[in-house]
Image (cartoon, rainbow, N blue to C red; front, side, top):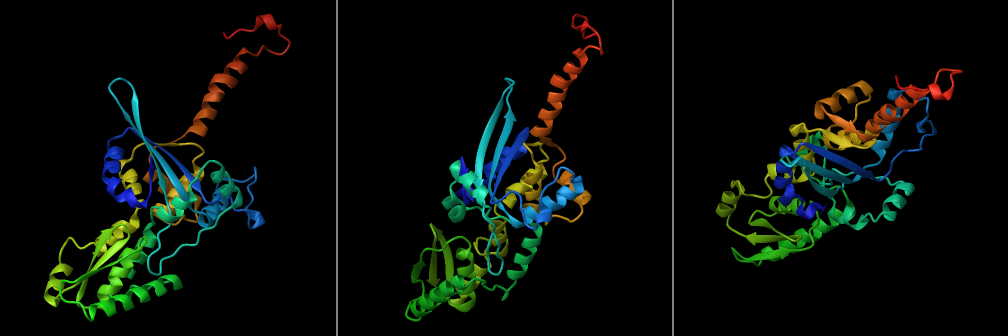
Length: 334
């Protein structure tokens, strides 16, 4: 099942319930790029030490981002079977106020994902936001009274038009009259409400869903009552919750401490750390310590397959091999 920003918050409680009650979780990720080739010293080498390989991979993770994350949540049944609930999450870095992200694309990765039907429109239009702890601290600062500032010229122009439109309307409107603002995308819904409420004292705003916001004229007394209600969608806690987006589910994965299963997982683990937990540390040992604290049990099927191959193929072959000079009919497992 594909999940985008439009339905993620609605599905989150069920997803959290499944993860907390499951036996293990399978994970796979797609990226906007895999290995950065600049500078030339960043090229991988068979002679890299683990710490050197980590440094090179760290640079790539800081340059590219996650475009999709897949989870398969496995729960056992009494009949010795597993039930799997599988989801594909389209992800896009969060942007709010002055918080913005630069995303790089690698041509080979674009071609690979396009060949297998990756929906770039859904990625860009309906990607679920996410943030790490450092980004959340910056957002908390922006949400302090009077601190919100808009970064992009496009957002500034749109906000100016909206403020002019509402100011013109409110001058002739009666108390309890309302108007509807349309085509509010992503976190524009929050930004526009916060800025309008700060700029115009005798209005209140209510999100209607479907990219719409209602603006209602009201008395100062009624507004004061609404500002102090726990149901206000623009409360600081609600904005932070929505801005965390997929990070809310990541935190459930961490809390559940279920075995995490994947294939060739190094880049997956690096991106999990960088995008949903904390910026990757410079020290390789610190990264390992952090990952083991987040996910105590990690099963990489690439390593499992190699270990199994050694036991089932190489081991028996070496066992059956006759001593040098012995005739073939003398081969024995004993």
